[in-house]
Length: 306
Length: 311
Image 1 (cartoon, rainbow over the protein chains, first blue to last red):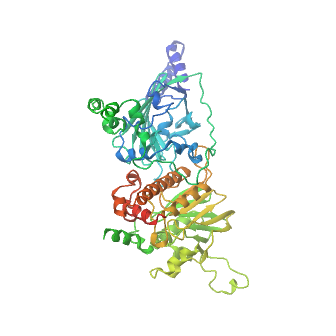
Image 2: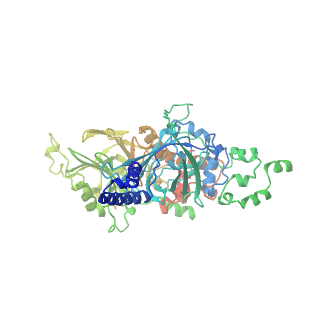
Image 3: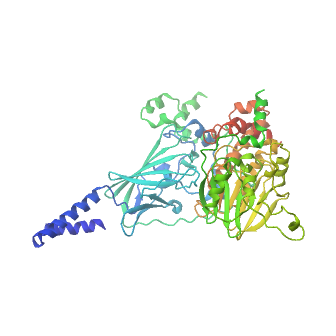
């Protein structure tokens, strides 16, 4: 809307010979005002954006392999939780329609972004994002409101506030329910604070998420995803209706007892990667770790020794 | 000796909860539904239901906070307090019983009640029978704090402020007298300490609490909940301590309780002593999130799970 007005003024100013002097001055004043509003940072992120799946593909649509925690700055405690996790958990009716949390959901398929503006002042009140995955919608409040107290409800989308930092949309999210860093049992706690940046470069949108989890992460975890602007796509619906897939004892929770989960070895063995590297931890995030990885015995070498 | 100390910590009087400075405590109010509110101060969360018939409150925190609590309630309704429900007998949930009861009244009449001169004085205090028995057996408890009406079977139903209210006994979870309260029209459940979001559960073994009772309570709460699509909302849950919840939080809580029970049971079945189980750190993955101090510590939790496991 503003860009349309802006263009009109450019046209008027450049054709100012036919305009009165005072009108011309007024036009310049308004133009400067509009330009300064535009230059104040706000970018228009609205539209449908299609995910670029060439980045981290195996971790996204197919899903991570069992026992692949490499590159995650996780603590020993959450590694134990991951060891305990069984994929059968998501067969339970109350788990079937659990949605991906907001710090994870944007990894899947298309997203739609739109703005909510005050109808009188045109001030930006909120930015809304809809994910393809489970059709979740989140709100990023842009009106300067405070985050709610700790005793308020936590949700899968959390409570988000945003501000423009240059041309980047910076988002702070709190009040998240417990979620996951990878959907193979690596938990992100409900105490996490998430900082995100949405950066638009023409028809490319980059989403950077930085997760600070005092419970389960030893360093912040950073993830990037890129999207391409689309005029041909929409965000499909995503109905979910839980059903009983298997009759089990009420309250049954599938899990592995400590030391009994052989699935933990699958990723390491399949790709012949030293188990230490597959188990993750802060050191596995950094390039220098490649040198250590070369020194560690591979599963195939251990098999040979046996 | 270590075991003895742990046991002493576990068997404590409910009134020992009430030893802190309340001067700086503020009562915060969170709207849950149109006429249901959660009051947060010090001690257990308070549920307030308002309507034309009066005010219903669940739990009363500490006596020292009653004035502030009453002030917070008066901002929500000027109607009299008619019903107080106690979810269990601990001091951080019943400490204000006498003061808040005195601020209300109970309608009386008929061919017997009307003849009792003090029958209408104060609001009704409803609890499971075991709450009364636990309080009566503690000489430190003022009789004015005792429930005035008890139930001894599975549930107690009544209608108040245009909705059905079901008080459900949850046997041997936090204590032997736990009640959870279901507001059927508002679609809100108040759990007492049978479900909390702050720390590991405190299993009050001296009052009949058990790990299996906690798990049963979680399953029963989940059974009452109908979530909205996406599970962010639907039936809302007011915990004994901590934040307002919905099904996702209760599921995580149940998952933690069940997995810890299974791990400790496995170790106990292998013949390990309590000391050996503690040394095995069966809750190492949950500790960063759930471990607290004192009665909420890892040591107390693991010990009480170990000791209340069914053979």
